[in-house]
Image 1 (cartoon, helix red, strand yellow):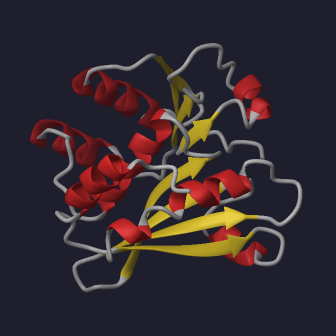
Image 2 (cartoon, rainbow over the protein chains, first blue to last red):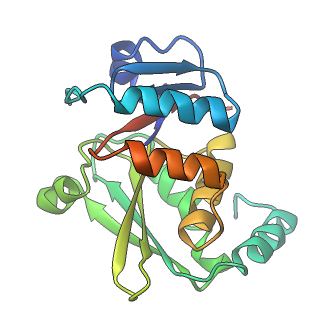
Length: 57
Length: 148
């Protein structure tokens, strides 16, 4: 899900987006900036092993 | 007046020509209270002209709430990309764009359309296998950007 932060300030606040790009995996793992593929995949795997918090609307 | 220059249109047309499957862009909108909906519609409207494999379906969040909920959409503007599986049935790629895909996000949208349209994923075989082995629950990856 690609989220345009200036149109959704409530989401930007919720996830404390102060710089972009910022990726959030399963509401748990945060990735700041753009990572090379292998590193990004490691972060996705880390986020997958945590149970997903249901995002509030 | 088109947003895309003729040169860009030609480039995109050439890129889209490589697609092997159709892509339906489902555009979620509402009539009032959505400042960036018209802009989003204007941006995506340029795409079907560049490939007969791209179509747009519009869903009104207020009038078609159930359909929007099926796609997990509760905010507008939003886009969902729906491709096809091997049997030709619709397959939701589960790729979503929330907010107008302007600036560099337009490039991301084009890349996503090409991916859903059949391009080889950029994931390495090793990473694909790691992900397939480790992920057995639905998960969400949100990528935040700002217009540039």
